[in-house]
Length: 169
Image (cartoon, rainbow, N blue to C red; front, side, top):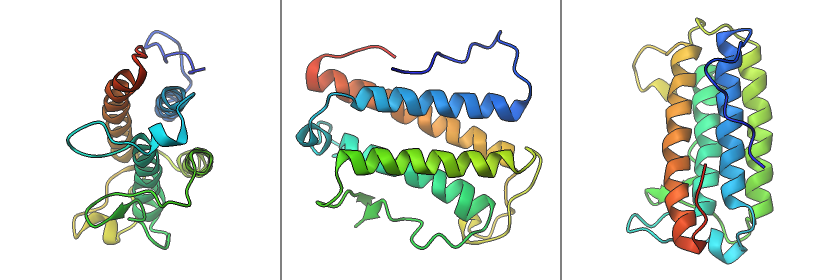
């Protein structure tokens, strides 16, 4: 079951906690949208763009990895674009729904650790992620992650409705 929507009128201790609350909320909605889908449904595309729900989960996991660990902290993460093959999102035949969900949850924990160990005004380390531009602040990175999650969870709303008629947040 999804976490409750982080209402703007609820008092929150810091802006970082606001970002964390929204990230947690969007991840929970994403996982709720996947709940009850078969492995086949997770691997089937239903839109002209061709992505599948499983690919979307893996993509969002890597989005967090790219922006927070590889980009902001400047860590060597191996393959930061491991969610793509031949210019599109990709899930290997050996990756199950449980694997994808576990990877998302593990990344969420690492993302939380990065966020909690920095101030929002901290600037990321220079590196490949920035493609020659000045690194962004953590606050800007988090704002970007929120819009990415909001947009893609909306996409998944549509796909889930096409699969079985399920609607809602």
